[in-house]
Image 1 (cartoon, rainbow, N blue to C red):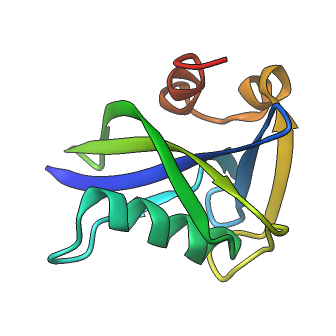
Image 2 (image 1 turned 90 degrees about the vertical axis):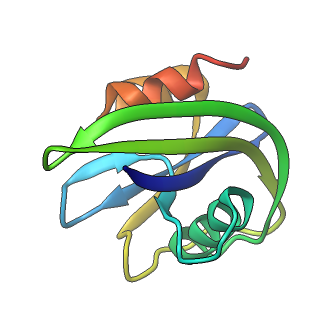
Length: 120
């Protein structure tokens, strides 16, 4: 099973979304665990790599499960906060904070929308 972790970065009632040009999708920042890395370490690293933000972990938001190229994938999520402004990276070509309802409409994947449904 593929293992990944990510964050729902929240600020002023809005959540941070990233756009990946290579997939032409809007999603939440996340990525695969590196060898020896904890789920929490991976979540913080991936959000930092994709957005430039150094975040603080808050409560866990559970996991989502789906298949990628026929292989099962689990993504564990945390609510996060951060100071500073997000920026694009090698992996994403756009970042934006969106109000919760707008974020649900913008997200490309049901699994990401399911994560947002876990909090208000």
